[in-house]
Length: 285
Image 1 (spheres, helix red, strand yellow):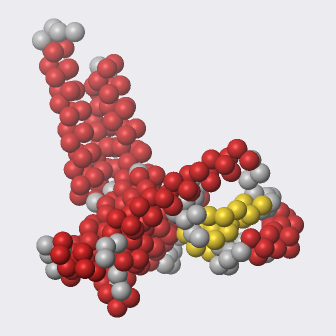
Image 2 (cartoon, one colour):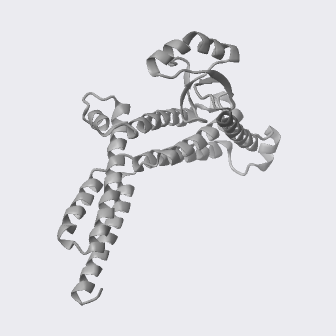
Image 3 (tube, one colour):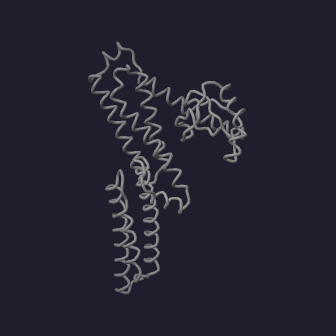
């Protein structure tokens, strides 16, 4: 069987992974399923390891001891960061009454709004195509939510359910987006043209279209620079039109902000072209 059950999103590796309660269960999974997985996918898990972040055991097909040691050290650093954040937010009840200058409800509300703001920013980063940065920001949000869960009573966590649900939704979006960004051009176009998409697929598709548009914008701006450098002004309008078309195709979270940025870049390029043409007309080099 393929490793599809008991999956959680592992912040440490940035994708869904199976999680086992004990090493024995993880090793048994490898023992009884590795052959079938090898036949289906061409590679199979060969060892289990403890994940500091998830608090359980994962399986992996990576047999490099050096790489495993590096991953273990990375996970340890991440886990220590979680512990640090949690401890920094844990205070005795008596100290809270003496030191807190604001009502707890206001502080909690501010914390929740801050997390939601960061989640929104991670969504905008995906529209820009900055997937690694989006992943890092989502990981920080997860740390903060874990800290909140540690220090607040269960009956006060209701306001953070939206944060947690949104975070998990964005993590799924990021994982799917990474898959499509690395797919072939034909696969991407087939996905974009697919009918009957789910709501989550539509969001991924919108981000993918915007990412492709940003890549084309960068290419068009590069071509415009070359046109200016080579004084080939007869084809300048073509590349400007291509750039404008791609800017207009950007949609999704942060659309206005992203479009404004690239419009400014295009405006600067057009100004450079105008100055060069004027200098040439005036006999300058």
